[in-house]
Length: 385
Ligand SMILES: Nc1ncnc2c1ncn2[C@@H]1O[C@H](COP(=O)(O)OP(=O)(O)OP(=O)(O)O)[C@@H](O)[C@H]1O
Ligand SMILES: [Mg+2]
Image (cartoon, rainbow, N blue to C red; front, side):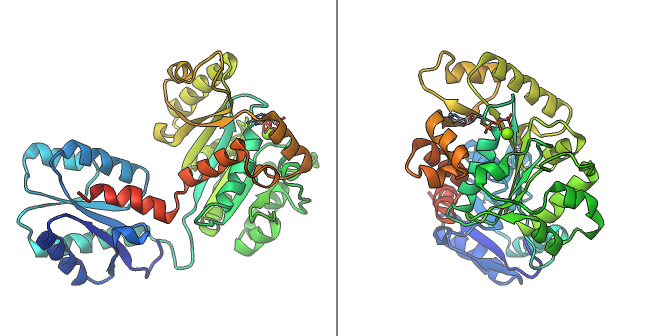
């Protein structure tokens, strides 16, 4: 959200006269733009009416707010029992309107909403990118394969976001090999020149790949450069999320303070695991440690099963029971394609575009950054009865 942008509003109530009243209130307030749910844009504010099965609506509201798909939701309802009001508050709804509607109340609420947004807005021209860390629950489970191919798949996804890929594997960073690039600079350049860090310095240090992904590799050999500190990590990621739509971090198995800071600042952490007992046991321990130590909120950490085969000795549900949370995504086992991709320095979408594994990465990227059209159809129309 940038200062000076109009705030987009979707009014999703079935009653025509009620919808018109909301539209009039929005129209009479400065700084708002009503958009159609089917237009394919993500709204800042969604105005809805509580339906016949309130709990279903509250669950959807929590999902939309929890996933950051909309900044705020205004709710109106015939029923304003204390129990409904309590549930409304718990769902994270900031403004509630009993019916019949008081238009002044709606306009006051819109002004309050605008004030809340302006407090957190970025100066014009800046983004608010998503940081996704990819960590391994064991060595060799495919963390770099996932980080690299997910970054490329994101760059190639419908909304064509700008993507950066950052390597936290000190010394053994392999991203340049996976993408056949010869970076001039690496992390050392950032740590050495942290006081000079701004957008143009950053863009000079990053190496672009043909897919559009901009890479910050780790050093190729130990040459006495300073390792990143949590403070440097924070400054770098703060800048990167203003410059890029998506920042993907290959966190490997690094437990350095800077890597932990990276996890803390991530919007999502993908923990890569495979269907083996030692790996699932590590996954479980890591989940608990990250969450208990307060590095990552429970809802932000997702388990991705790599090298997945349906006919495995350990079933998906066994794995889910073992780690006490659902598996977010499975990536099929394809040794040939993944090995050829690494050895030829090509992403899977280029080496084997039609393979199941390349499609899996494309679909995961779409899930992580849904295209505008799919998002509108799936999300906003949920409230159209
Ligand atoms: N889905 C997959 N199916 C089959 N093989 C895979 C898959 N993903 C990765 N591999 C293979 O696993 C090996 C390790 O992959 P990768 O280097 O990505 O793992 P890593 O976890 O980053 O390893 P490290 O701990 O060394 O950093 C590679 O040979 C790769 O080809
Ligand atoms: Mg690796």
